[in-house]
Image (cartoon, rainbow, N blue to C red; front, side, top):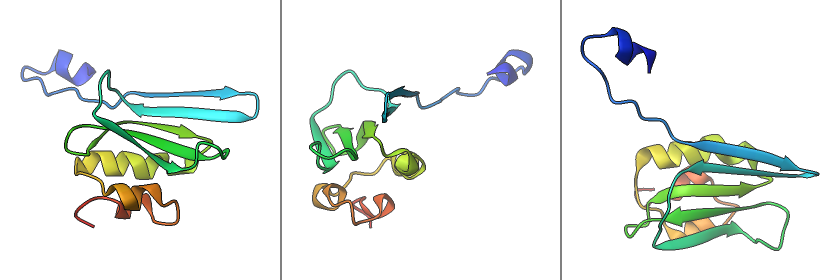
Length: 106
């Protein structure tokens, strides 16, 4: 952002919002931002301590992703979001499949 202040030509400043909180022995993280979405898909089970919920647009592209106790997956989710490709819902739901292999192009 400072680069835009001192340079005669500014660049688009785009950053993906990120939030996290620790609540006792639980960690919650949220990557992205959306006020509306067309559908959600859960990776794993929300009945278990570790799960991920993706909030998808009409083309099944992730707009925001909530992790419960899954901090090690954040970089993979960010990479998936950077691709801006639709995800395969069945593959995303399966926690045994790498996050990076859940896009429709995989």
